[in-house]
Image (cartoon, rainbow, N blue to C red; front, side, top):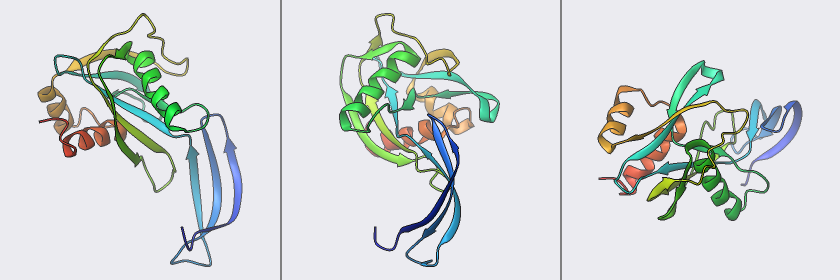
Length: 186
């Protein structure tokens, strides 16, 4: 994009999951540069699994940074290059690993969003998975995860939990908004 240029970057943290750096970046309105802390993350896939009877699966997962268990749609980072094939494979993998389910209907791409563009470049790819059914015993969360429970919610329950603030993670809220805006839910 015109007017954007990295002037300097100092890497502060480099791990398999994220990179934190202090960057000085020229922008269209600040050509002299602005000093910014940036967290870079691999892209993610987020799946809204819908069962044949119209319920939505969410997992309750321990989230160390907020010291809480959160109800969320299954999600995870893309391994390897973020090709369309790898992103779709990640959606299927996360549904199996976190919820123990597989898609028998369609996996419908619903676009992307940035989870918190003020500090990270993480971009999440959103999907609706239709007619999900229990998988063939491949429910094995990643060793860094603690999935406490998987539960099916009716659309009314899901709306109520969102309205009350029981569901409060960005991925799930963004995907629910995209489902509603795209006419995928009544």
